[in-house]
Length: 344
Ligand SMILES: C[S@@+](CC[C@H](N)C(=O)[O-])C[C@H]1O[C@@H](n2cnc3c(N)ncnc32)[C@H](O)[C@@H]1O
Image (cartoon, rainbow, N blue to C red):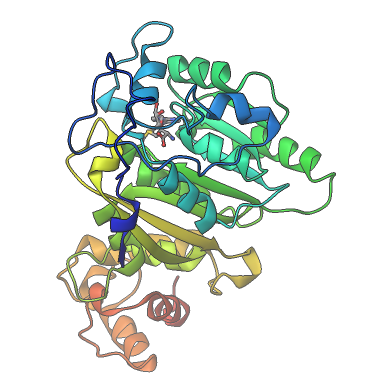
């Protein structure tokens, strides 16, 4: 784990010639990030550069843009904690390996700070934003550029195949190309988004998310035989290779949340790389049933699928004790168990 102390938002005090005495100073935990990191493309240059020639995603510019067109008080219910540190956004873009010509799905562009970094890297961005005020704000910020499409929609209701695929196909000139997902995600939809996107290895190659640090660590690193180990870990490892990237201190967000952020990268598997099971549906039904009685032995919790004797035999066949519990099994063990049970 790399603590992003180097990405904490520390910057030199403004020189007297550039300091504006009427500006409210940032609170002690939120100082502006070092300037001059983003090299925007022409299309976004005016939108990402403030009047001092610095990058436009610090405390002041975030407040200014939230105040523009009437005050948009950050909504807790939508997880509206905006990123103040351009360098963190650049690290997210780098973690996804975004380069010129990529097509990126961004979930929740908010004030457009991560959007700016993605556009600066040369990506075409499809940004899905639920809050109509923020969708309008980000449209205003970037104006009309072919590099950006903003869709006002709830990501959990967003139909990737009908709304996103046509754009991907057009941008990749109808050749097979995989898109990427990069998002500072509203924390309350993180599990749903992971479940929605990871099985889409035919569309996306990589997904980089800023989550609650604890969630990012749990999804990437939960070890068997710990309370953190859940069915979602089996799901994540079935469809992807997860990697915890770095921690982002809470002081980098406005308003400051009660927890730190953590960045996770999922390399999505293609369908041919999924572990072989007769049916994904029955496999995950078995995993979920197994964890319903987390402390129960599998020979008891899976009895609705087949007899205890069959379960014991299958466990023994795959080299596990007949008394195994769900938290003893890594993803591959569940696959082998599923393939050895007679009636699955
Ligand atoms: C944590 S903020 C991140 C904003 C911006 N990307 C940034 O880094 O500052 C989350 C954003 O997601 C939006 N959002 C919340 N729930 C959403 C949903 N279900 N679908 C799409 N966007 C959503 C919020 O309105 C907000 O703009």
